[in-house]
Length: 445
Image (tube, rainbow, N blue to C red; front, side, top):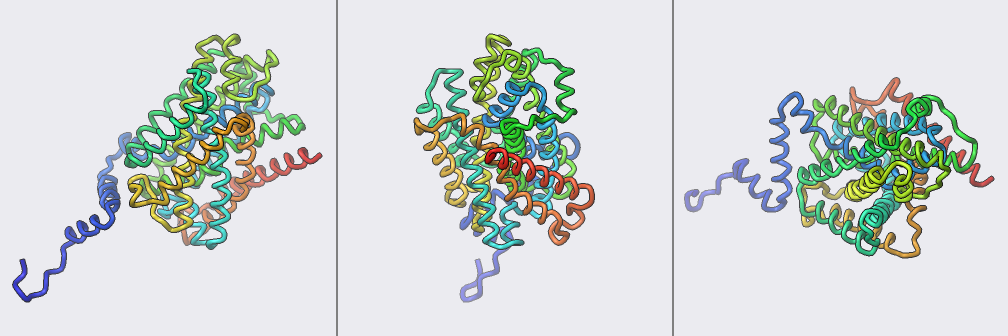
């Protein structure tokens, strides 16, 4: 204690921290995580500590809408359009690596950088495009829950959708960063079911290999729609925003970028591999039989007499698991982006009281999508498939901002995009624009 009448001694660093914690408890959690990051070991253990953003962003692309898109691609066109999946996977590597690099180097999410560099109007435009894409995509995830639960357990959407919505909101709002990440990564293991289903279908591997490397595209509206939807479901706008913001929330450091690139490439390649096995499962069984399908559940049912009951069950299990994973991940993209646009706190380690907009946006996105899917008149198939074509169109509203930010030496310094990376990004953006224009022209013809 200080002597009577004397000034109180200035608070020590420890006292300052305690007082700050009393006002904002989330700072204590972030301080602890920074100390944990400082002690990260090297080697394989360090890689395991970094894994997460790339795997979750990539694997969540293989959601029910993606499964439906890949199933339609294989059932209608056999192995012919596999090259579209391969090209989309390459684009996923390029832009997910760009998002992760930008987030790690700047310590800021995509929409925050758009707001700071291009202004609030540009940020509002970008976040509006993301919100439209994300609500449609979350509807697709919950529609996948509905069809998967009905396929496996005979449970209607009136029960399965509310249970799934409550479960994912409870996971995010009541758990810290690491618990959420561990649960989601564990749930991602369900995608092994699609590899098994594809192998059980007995595909023609030589035809599949040829389809991967020999471009061929029928000049019909339906074929171009499937190609655009494949691009939109693989390289989704929400995934780009999620990747960058999640890397920031994970507190990845610049020296960990090489390890994070391993995470990004692993997630993107696994996304393509899983999509490949979904396509070949349908190409080997449904396409020769002339079976037309409209969603992943129909694909699972149609597989049963052609590839056996185990393949059908694995296909349905993958559909339900993928729906639950993506239903938890996609709304995080909305929550991060809204908070960045409004300059409000965000993060999985913050409680609802500490980050009300973040948790409110997450819960509101899930609740709104649930309400839409529960309307009996809403057709689930167009929701699952056509939202992915919309994703491809909305990429044109997001990618120019990403590329402009990535070129800025004041933001990224030696990590800025230049040379071959800039050429590749520009070529991919041009290809997306041409595909969307071609689809528009054929739709109006």
